[in-house]
Length: 169
Image (tube, rainbow, N blue to C red; front, side):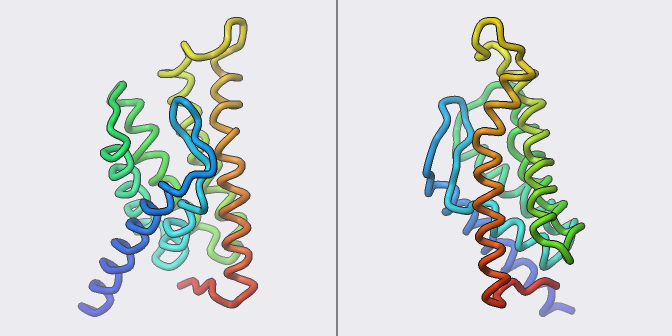
């Protein structure tokens, strides 16, 4: 039992750290937050697939908190909760789709999108171009990086699976 706990702690730490490193390998950075990275969600998704919902949500939330601290800007406590620990913690729901990992990726990143979308409507509405609904603006802005992140994550997980490297459970 003790060996399992040590392994859990080591893997969680390693996957969160790897996600942090990958989050700085950006292909594109949007002006008000959000970026397209080289698969920074994949380690958290793998953590969820390997250890389950609770560990996946915890690891994602820790990653989100670390990103919040490292990003270093403050706007509103609720907005920061939506954009960091909640949004990244929701990646853990991929665990609910262990048998269909690509569906898990889609569900997890859709949940992350919803968290960022709500934050965008509530806290970034003033950046919407004149005449554009804040709802449309938030959907387009957040979709512009979440959809590519979803595609990149699906591609990486698909390639890992094809090579027999996607070990779950």
